[in-house]
Length: 382
Length: 147
Ligand SMILES: [Zn+2]
Image (cartoon, rainbow over all chains, first blue to last red; front, top):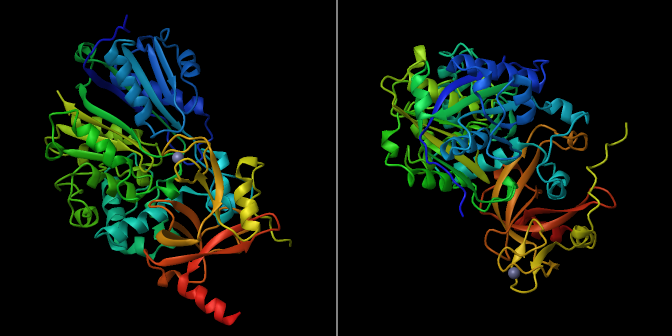
């Protein structure tokens, strides 16, 4: 006897955000409800149409009951994992397998304490493995900005990338954000301004980090058949991959340049007939700027070691070879923990991006996380 | 105002070998007694041969610098008076990719070079917490001349 599963083509039919803001004063449930309502309206679906829920942040069953969703055929709460791609990936599998028909995937992310609050002793960041902190805290290693500083320095050592390239990256992303009314950071920024900012963990500066905020994001997945009856142009999942290569100790990764995205990209391209040269737009995690550069190389969108010059030459800008992070990235739209990359990819493929629309976009890749683990999804127009 | 205390160690008997070692001036790393593989961070099983017979063992204290970052912001009260400080990932000489997170001391950030040879030293944060830190081999030699 085997578990009965289908192999159905899966589409994204609705996307939505909550009222994303710095210290919004709203609860996780508020952000989930606002994002769910926005995604349902975008799709033209009713709450009762949703029969599966996956989330990172809050509780899937709690959200489903609160929202008046149908009885769930499938639900999932994910913990520490590669950001929004995890609930999204499993939502696709649930629909493909026929275990649910219309699934909502959430990422609800509440703002973390500031470094000033941490230094004053009033707060601590959560640690994925408390026992391992005895090999970190005594050395003053508390913040993800510190492993990011290690990864940046090692990456610059092994590649052609310089601090000036990171400065250009910040400028390019901000230029995209200037075209996005929903970005939280919307003042012009030059590479020179970036270079004048103080270090947090040299060579990392504050403009290398995603922008802390409270955010709720929701994406609705359903079958091709249902998608064709709905109001939005359907966007299809062509391929996807999750990878994990190491435990959560970023600081002692054996190789800080070819991390999980290298493995993930290999898996992704082995599951599709599409090639890196087919990609119209890329939406690559920028929790720290070096992560986007790692993904550009891992996915084969630029040659190894060349992501810095590739960005500085304008290849990821509007009109460039691979327009990347066209919403401005989480550095500018605020930390939505990967969901903004999925949602922006969908909007590009629908042709709904207005001033920042990439003409003729028909294949988009979005990718999350770095280091120990990561995930990526390839989306196509009909 | 009193100097804030360093972050306390967890109550973790499985890592006593390490902290007893540093208090005795030794860097000890968990090693598999079946195949000789070093395991850090400590785990109850050897990822090379799956044996569960592991014990802390003194290592040479020689290492190569793999990555570093200079921390300018304090993320904990104890480190407010210590910024900027150098956080470093070093590869211990005993085994390829045997990475250890530490502080780099006795060198200015501008002089740090990935790949440089390092040697362990010990710094007392409190009577209980003695940490292995690393410094350039040359600085070590100067230090011994001076003493
Ligand atoms: Zn072994």
